[in-house]
Image 1 (cartoon, helix red, strand yellow):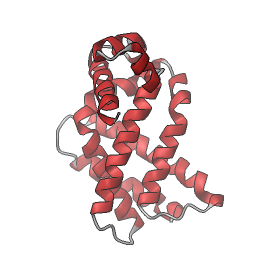
Image 2 (tube, one colour):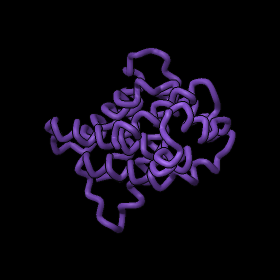
Image 3 (cartoon, rainbow, N blue to C red):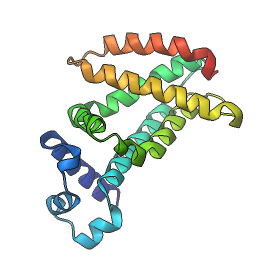
Image 4 (cartoon, helix red, strand yellow):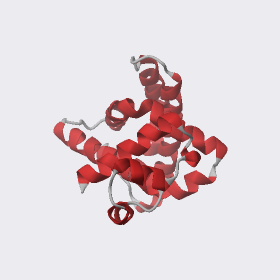
Length: 183
């Protein structure tokens, strides 16, 4: 099941290099995958579900990687490390994801279909960094970190080199701005 989903996600991401998100038909993805309609539609009914699945896979890999390293008690350093690992995981898909994010400019309602999984992913990043997510401030912390993350993704897309030094400096600076809110 995992390999089948990954195959479909990869096909969809490749299509994003050639076409806008809204130009890609779900049936086109199904045909390129050479998976029966029945099996395909048991796994995914929409393109949004495919993207959610992709990001969940990235989150799972991120979680495994973070558990292998020894994070300290410094929340800011932990978040910095987690964000950089996430960008490393996303790097092979950078152009694909940039095209995907450009789709939000044309059709902002796309975010409405994806926001729950996005905030869940951001919550997972905060949890992995050992941030206290007590109910009273939990949503505020997720919201603030989500904006920081999106601003870093924006900077990452602008950076054309493989060197993330500029993005790292911006991430460090922005984490310093919100560090007291997140702790």
